[in-house]
Structure formats: structure tokens, C-alpha cells
Image (cartoon, rainbow, N blue to C red; front, side):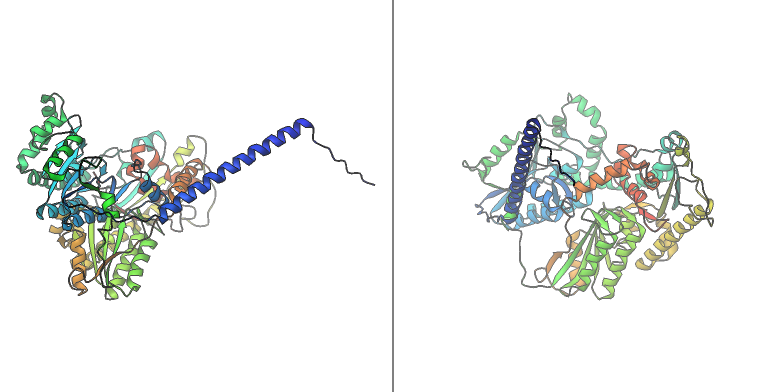
Length: 631
């Protein structure tokens, strides 16, 4: 007969067990309280309704954009809500171009708004093309007989281009002036560090002597062709920038250029006072603190003693929430706008990247929606993976085949793959300062045989055919595979130039002459027949409406067709990146991706190549149509 012996815990064990149960209960209680508090807070934000603000006559609009200027909000809903709730948190803030222009245009038509006080200190513009659209809106405001005053503690050249559209500009006396530096394109070149020091070899396959996207992996400096091409388009953009400043400030371009070129000696002569130098060069009208500017406007008839700033004013976000931007149309007929912003990568992507599948689906939904009569594709992309670009281009053709006009509006950048997805539109609009072209293809193959050899790791084995295992980066690159890859890249280039020639109605030789991977400004591209006309998004919308025979504005809606970012995507994304770094030696395929993260600056500049090197799919050979054409 078996006996069951039950051992009772002693008093000390029971004490610690009871203590642990109490601690555990308290822990769970606190976690539940915090969880439900956060949940109720989010629900409250979602259910909160903004009450329309009654705006007094003769008011001032406080135009204070905070954050990155983007075509499309790339934040997930949770981040967006938390950023909106905490006005002090500027780290995750973005400003949608359409919202900024919409605010200014609404104020132009609003009889209650007579003045704009603009502060660009927390504004982070992306490029000149998008800024030109904001400038045009500010010029429309002034053309209506209203005035703009700009104030800043100190401005970058992008911020200053926007502020220069004001009737008068004031700098804080203790601010850091106006820094007009010019344009530059410098990248870290890593061949010596990667190949000579670490033993990581890269083989570059490309067509086009100007296709320089992957040069940092295989060279110690920029190629002569890259320098010539980059300086050509940058000089064009810089000349236009100087002309814009000169026109806005009623100065000669030569005077502006000289004051920029001689800035170092000029500031030294001004005893290191950047603000005083800006006044001397007539870049600004005077030096005032924010409080002095507010008092100055109050004396002009905009004062309100009851308000915190002493002005009869309304903030930008409050103005948006007052529903003054909503102009409903009686018609359900629409122009669809699809935004393609960011790197072009395979699959489905959240806003901020262009997914071959997800962006194609947006275009497909526009094609299948009977209420949408035409589509504007707004492109702001340096390109990316070729097949993903082709997926999007095919949907553009499908829209046209369905009888729906497609008009492309290029933003700051629409180069390489960005041009690929644009070329078949009925009409292409670009700003003179858009960066485009870069019609070329490249492939990059890493090899870590020597790197592993340095630590005594070698790969060996057998295969049934010459190419079996040839894509393994831990084995020396097979020359047969190298021949195969180069032929694939050359075919990709022929496809690219052939499609451009067919889309633009030009001989292939004529396209090849302006291709070869060379980057152009929008103005240079128009001269070479790569774009059709100068204009912004509104011009493209009007063109699409005309082609669809929709009549005048107001008889149709402009509807953005877009997805939103998945909640917590950024959180899990950063954790996955850390997992990749940890498992590099465990999975040899991930070794292909570590080079772009070797130098922090390189990671920022070359993240698109890094992403494609890390990505593993069924294709052993992947062609890239990407342009590192930023400044």
C-alpha cells in the first residue's frame, strides 16, 4: 500500500510565498490600472470632437509648421494621436504638404484673416520643389491684399526660402542668423575599410557611367562622371534658389550670390554676429524678439489684451480643426490622388515607403471605382527595386486602358525607379527644381569569403551544376554567375530605356543619350523631353480634370486614396533590426546587409541598398533602379 506524504511548508517559506503573492497582486493591479488609463486616454482622443472656432474679424493666422514636410503622413495612428495630444513633442511631428497649402489657401479666402505671422524655427522642409508649392500659396495670400510677417531665431536655407516670401522678416537679436551654405552631395566611401581592412568584397554590375548609387562600396572616392553630373544639376538648383531669394527680397542675384560666397569673412567683420550680418545683407528687415514682433503687430491693429500673446490670432492646428479647410462638393465625381513617397520595395508597405503590391493595389482600386474619373500619381521617390517599380507602372497602363487619364506630379525627387513609375502617364508635371532622371540599373553582390577566412571559417562542399550554391556570399563569386548578373542588368537597362522611348515617343538612342544613369533637374529634364510641363500638384489635378472632361473646379472632389501605417510598426521594426544584427553570424545571408550599417552616415545614406541586400526571396539576382541624388 502506497502512502502519500504531504510536506507542509515551513513558516519562513509561507512568509516569503505570501509576500510574493502580495507583490505579484500589486504588480498586476498597477499594470491593469496603467493599461486601462492609456486605453481610456486613446479612446477619449478618438472620440473627441473639435468645436469650430469663432474667428474674430481682422485676425492673425499663426503659421508655425512643426516637423518634417511630407507628402503623406507616415506615422502609425497611435504615434499620430500621441503627437497631437502632446504639443511639446516635436520629435515625431510631420507636416503634410497638402495641409500646409490648404491652411494658407483657406486663409486667403477667409475674410476674417488679414495677416499671417510665420515662424519656421521647427519646420523641416525636404526639398525645393515642395517648398515652391508652399511659396506659391504664400504669394497668393499676398496677392489678395493681405500681409505676412516672418519671425525666427535662426534659419536654414530651406526655412529661409519660405520666410523670404513674407512682407517683412525679423530675427531674434540673440539668434543664429540665416545660414545659406549652398548645395553639397558628400558620401562616405568604404572600399578600403570593407575590402582591405575587413575582407568584405563587393562586385558592382551596372549600365551607365553616371549610375553612382553603389559607388561607396567599390570606390574610395566619387567617380569623375559622378562629380560632373552631380555638380551640373546642383548648380542649376542653386542658381534657381538664388534667383528666388533675390526676387523675394528685391535684390540682384549677383548681390545675393556674393553675400553667400563671402559669408565667412562678412560674419567675421560683423564680430561674429550672424543676425547682424543678415540685416546688413538685407536678408531680413530687422532684429526683434518674438514679444517685440507681437507688440509690433498689435500696434498695427491686431491686438487683443485678453489673449496670451496680445494678438487676435488663431493657431495653424486650431484653424484646421475649425473645419475651415473643408469645402464639400455636391458631386461624388472625383479625381483620385495616389501618393508614392519613399523607397520602392517589394510587397506591401506602410506610408513612407512605396510597396510594389500595396501601391499597385491603390491604383487598382482607383481603376475599379466608378466615381473616380482620373488619377493623379504624386511621386516623391529616389527609386528602388526594379520589379516593384514595374508592378506600379503596369497599373498606370491599366488605368489608361480603362479610359481613365493618369497625370503624374513629381515632387522633390522622382528619379530612377521614381521615373520608372511615372513615365507612362498621359502627362508629367515637374518643378524646375525637381530631381529626376537617373535612368539606369545596377546590381551589387557582396562576398565575405576573405572576411571569414580571417577568423578561420571556410566554406566547402559539392554541387550538381555550375551555378548550384553560386549565390552563397561565403564562397568566391563564380564568374559564370557574374556573367549572368551583368547580362540581367543590361537587359534591365534595355527594358528601361525601351519603355521610356515608347512612353515618350522618342527613339531608343535618343533616350540612351540622356539616360546612362545621369541625374537632371526638372528644368534640364524638360529640355531633354523627359517631362512635359512645369507645375505642382494643383496643375496636375486641373489637367486630369480637363482630360476627364469634368468641368471647372468645384464640380468634382479631389480624393486621396491611401492606406495608414500599422500601429506599433515602428516599435517592432526597430526590434527586428536588432535581431538581424545579433544573428549575423548565425545566418550567412544576413552578412550581406551589415556593410551599410558599418558607418552611421553610411547607414543613413545607403539604407535602401542595405534593405535590398538583407532581403532574401526567390530571386538570386535583383536589379535596382535607385538614385542617391539628395543634398
